[in-house]
Length: 265
Image (tube, rainbow, N blue to C red; front, side, top):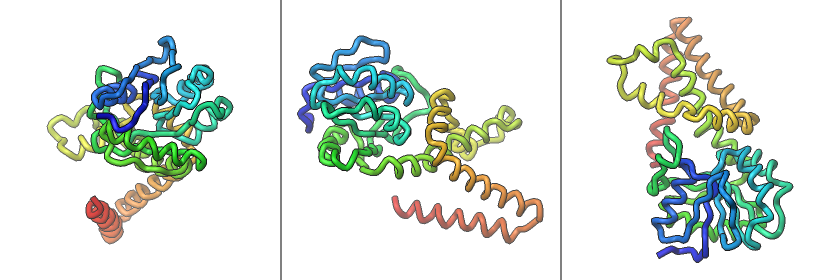
């Protein structure tokens, strides 16, 4: 039995994330309609609209269809950056609907509706970045997201979201992509195990989307990338100088942080 009383939920965009929202909401017993980006739009009965499109497309969609939204509707975007999206949709916002930034912390290395899964969000975190005036509305969405399988709903600011995602997600994709572009990658058969699999798993599987995400969040991504390069240069210097003490120290520092993180689980 659904814990939220939305009359109708509309999912805009039926790729991996949108398709998974559609399937999860349907499985939870909600009345849900899926609208792909080029489909006719009818939203007069949709109390909740989730926009699961690439950021630039999501911005354009809201500008085009803000007038089609039901009065009093809640609109949540599912884009991986928040400040740039808000800046892009700002002129489309009005008092007839409530806009709340969102980001489901779930995904796969593949895309498309055919790979979407009603269980994709099981145990995952749903991040919401409401305006201060919309905090209560954002809180009211928690039962819905829990119905879809999310393990937690995190409220934060646009700035904190983008800063943390630069580190926990975007940097990982950049490092993985750089690692995969080594001349030895295609020769690794028979020489690789878990380490290769773990580091090569992400690697920005959709170059068009991830390029947009990186550029839209470059103010936060560049500093963490620079810090990563500095740490890698620390290893490089230690190797060049046969400095075992430095290597041990750097590796021990990383090991201690890893153990601390494991203890927080």
